[in-house]
Length: 109
Image 1: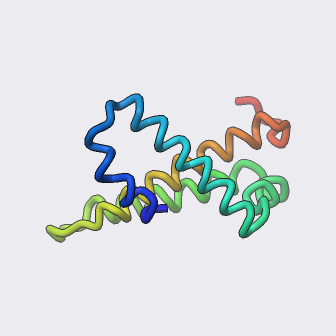
Image 2 (image 1 turned 90 degrees about the horizontal axis):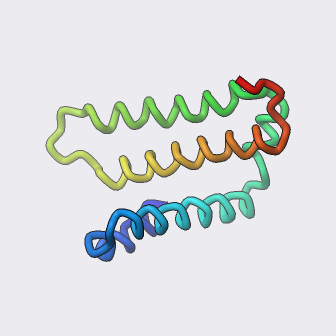
C-alpha cells in the first residue's frame, strides 16, 4: 500500500484536505478489494470464528507497531512505514464496522 501512497505523495501536497481524504478512502477500498482477491475474506472468517476480539487484536497489533515506529529515538524514522501502518489500522477499523453492520456482531455496545 505504501508504494501507491508514495506515488501519490507528490500530488498530495497540491490537494486540499477534502480531496486528500477522498483519495485515501479510495486507496483503502482498492487495498481491501486486492487483498480479498489474494487472501479471500480472511478477516470475516476469523471474525465469525472468534468474534470482536479478533478485530481488536489486529488493530492492537497495528497500534503497537505505530507506537514503536513513532517513538524510536532514531532521526530517520521511516514515515512510509508509519503511513502504511495508519492505513492498515484504518482499514481494520472499517472491516470491523462492516462485520458489525452485516450482522456478524451480536453485541451492539
